[in-house]
Length: 120
Image (cartoon, rainbow, N blue to C red; front, top):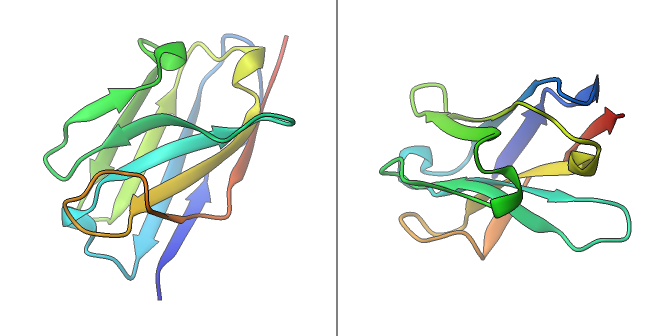
């Protein structure tokens, strides 16, 4: 059974930082492309950041230079360091894992989501 469990969400003021974690089980973690998506009220879910098994990363333009994704294969955990947070970053953040090892994100397993709220 695949489980992706997020933690680290919360409420911060603009300019603050948060670090999200996602612990994975039931997948070949070291071979899985992992990522973070977010969904704000009334908006579509969008990809925020992704990291491949080879640790190549990509980011949405809106978060480049502020967010950083990383992974610890020994702990089967992926992280999202979020600095310089803005009110428009407010959303539910979801951890994702590609269903097929060594394939890109798209057909994903999903976590339950964690709320991030940034106040001005």
